[in-house]
Image (cartoon, rainbow over all chains, first blue to last red; front, side, top):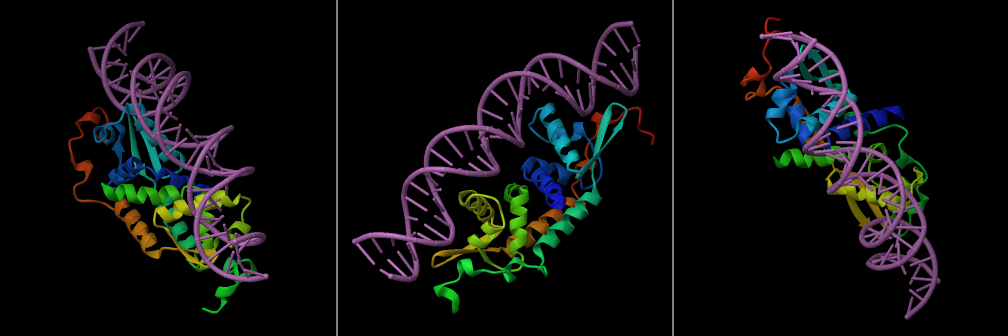
Length: 111
Length: 111
DNA sequence: TGCTCACATTGATATTGTTCGATATGAGGT
DNA sequence: ACCTCATATCGAACAATATCAATGTGAGCA
């Protein structure tokens, strides 16, 4: 399903401590790349790469203002991701556990 | 910080569509590896690798019962992850945006 | 027009992740 | 003791990612 893939991209983006820290920084509002760069020991090209990833998965928006690029969290994507996390971890109707599970039934049936 | 690293591991684990699907499957309760394997076109060793990753980040618990290994979602880790996601995306007091931002101030100051 | 600054892109390299077949382990049944 | 089945681990091949230095791009200033 498409939804799994899209959300996997967001989680993958969050799978790097530095990128989590960037999201953390952006939680108060938009910041330009130079402000973020000052907080890390990281080359400018590496930061640019991380920002691209964060933007591509939809978690971050960028807006260019003159010389500077400002980044901010896309709260819509963020909320959808949180919803997705709730969805996949809540019980479902057509659950696999209600299917044939003869493959793993044996001596421990009576517990 | 340690928290960033721990949670990054969880997100990294969720950064693979197949592993998200596995979590989805486990949301109703525990399942043995053979049941999960039946749902994927994936070798047994590959599934075992994915399950190891999911367990190592704390998102999934495993319990061996005789020949079979049963997996279930660790709701404690799950809730902590959701809380962490809320934390990093909420506004903070000591926000970077309140610091010196002379690096990116210029002609567009008056907007 | 030419310079500088902020940021993106490219190309190279090292590390990490995915996947599989083969093999190991360990429980239960015969 | 031996066999079988469920799962884990190992080793290798291949793909994807992280990182940097170098270079490109495009805005604004002189």
